[in-house]
Image 1 (cartoon, rainbow, N blue to C red):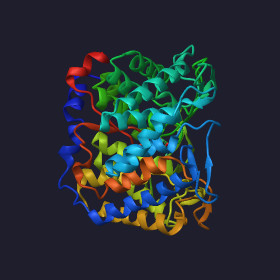
Image 2 (cartoon, protein in one colour; image 1 turned 120 degrees about the horizontal axis):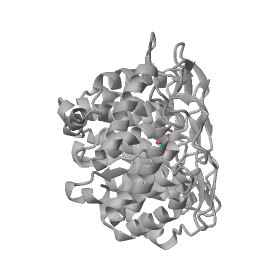
Image 3 (tube, rainbow, N blue to C red; image 1 turned 180 degrees about the horizontal axis):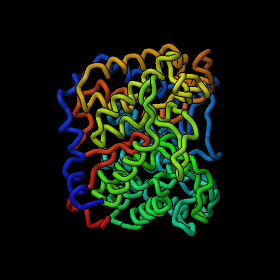
Image 4 (spheres, protein in one colour; image 1 turned 90 degrees about the vertical axis):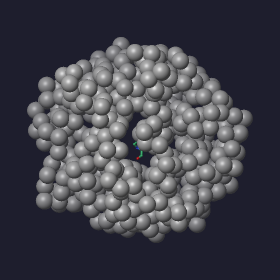
Length: 457
Ligand code: DMJ
């Protein structure tokens, strides 16, 4: 990218978001309180039935651990939401429990991506909010144990790493799982050790080198050979946070290489994946080399993209895509996992209590001040209450048409879904957008100051 373009990009961002703001959204204390009560409804049952475990199964009221020994995933993922909601007793009790009972010294193979975005991201943001050194110590211990995942011939991470031995598994991964710079870069910033930043940046750079002549990425890559295994190019599942993280890492760390990746990517995405049809603006799937359409599927995970467009300053596309997303939600009064968008036919009817559409609604509300977005939030709130609430918590749906509940409640419901819903109504200064970027799991991370730049350059 030409220097002039980069200079313009950094001059505009992250200030771009504030410059667009016409009016500030009016806080709605009553709605914020109702969302807090939703959080407490689920949290109190997690505490009663699954305290110390990764998750609560909301129908059977049984605890669920991903890998045998617990990594206290719901506690870590939910902690900064409680801090933002000013649920101090619950937050302090959680920090004490993590201090006493959480150990990452476990002989288990964990998914590097999930543990990074949920646990490393959650510990780092809770440390930044509280200044409690115990949380940073836990984060650094975890970061050291995850680092061997990147010891592949290409520098891109294996899918699984053993937290005790550092052994790895799973050479086939996807772009989203290669992109972990906001978390590892923040760990470098907070510890003063460049190794985390350098390692995570190298992985993203290596993947980027493998883009096609159209500047598109595939969906599956082999980290040993560096070859694409699946040529499907998408902004959705499996690639989503790669794009999100080029932009966010550029804003968090002032990294010009990341800014250039984002600028080139978004031009290619809008040229080849954007699909304007009668039902609205969507983003489809194409072959990374030819640009030929592969499918016209779009789903609840893709609904993060308006938020990224807002952050990049493209309010027009953000609003149009979000209109499509809201249409997807209101088809059945809860969005399906996947839709064939030209005729709005459901191809995967599950709802996993996902946050993305609410996240984008919050970003748009913040950027425009338009009360429409808080009204949409009311719809999400009412539908969650009507279809997902159980006597003890909230449950996913196996089918949004029949509203059949299933016995799962992922930790991102606490980290993201209810956090973004709360922030939509909370006082705007609950999060300072001038100094904060959310990681892909909804954990607010601090933007690096000029004085800290030496750590990453
Ligand atoms: C979360 O773990 C993160 O938002 C991730 O980027 C994608 N999927 C879930 C929520 O749907």
